[in-house]
Length: 228
Image (tube, rainbow, N blue to C red; front, side, top):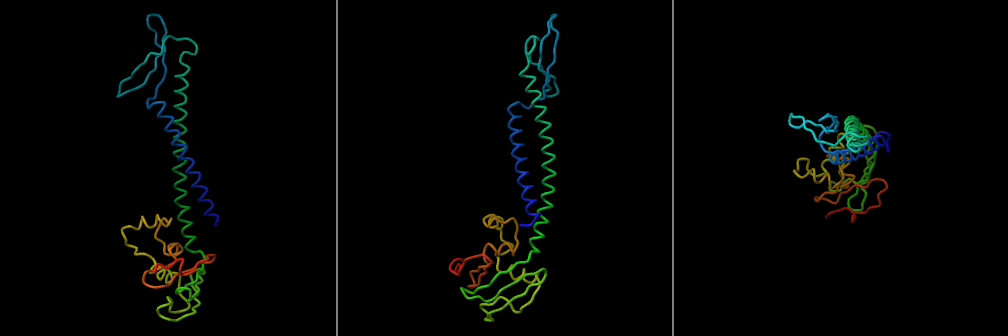
């Protein structure tokens, strides 16, 4: 795994933590109510009283909390302080999360670009008969052909560009214009239509022939992948 992928996964975990934390803050704020309150003291007939004060629809409202004595409004003071603390914390976390998402977007793009340029290789089979080995290095592709039968072989020569190979791979994928592409990609665990990633999932299998691809480390035979 590349360093950029590790960094992206770390950022993703941190973003998930921030999202969970924001949800917890919102739940606690909901329990404290949506009004920004303060506590004032009023002198009424020579006696001092605590009042809770807030603004509602342009009007200042009051609620009596009783006569003034030490600790009489401890609970209310604690709730007001906690609400202010949560609002500040939520604002800071929202800013941090937005910044994190921006960085993740750039990192995700970098990871995709790096993955597109990775060297890789695979074998091409017709049923259980190997017909070619493909090695992609940089922008060049080298093909070792072991069969030239037109129904079994995908490649006309031994060299091509990465772009030309991607065009061939795209022909082994489902149509790009399908209406249900989002559902198919989700089922395959992919975020975008990328022929190189698609064939790793589908092995380049088609209903029209017996050709399929095997990647290094896979213990597969034709009966494991073919749909015909």
